Length: 98
Image (cartoon, rainbow, N blue to C red; front, side, top):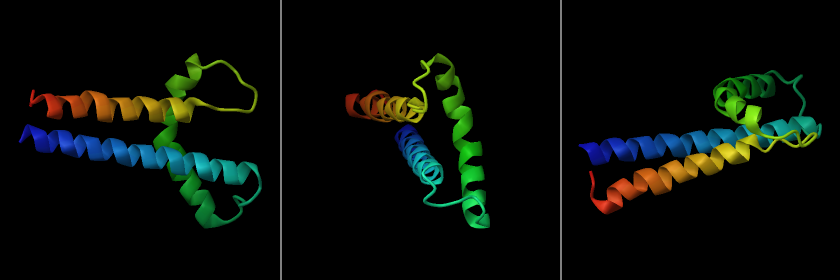
C-alpha cells in the first residue's frame, strides 16, 4: 500500500515538473512576442500556469541573486523536484524501506 502511495506522489512530482516546463516555455514565447496575450486561450493558460507554479518558485526567487532578465528559479525547482522524486522517494523503494 505504501509503495503505491509513493508511486502516486512520484507521478504528481513528474506532473509538477511538466507544469513548470510548460510555464517557462509559454512565458518565453510571450516575452519574445511569438505569441501574444491578446488571445484569450493563451492568456487563460498562462494565468492558470502562473497561479500553479508561482507559489513554488516565489520562495526560491527570494534567495536567488539578481541576474538581470534571467530567472533561474524554475530550473532550481525542477532540480529539487527531480532530486526528491528520484533520490529520496526512489531510494525508499529501492532500499526496501517501504
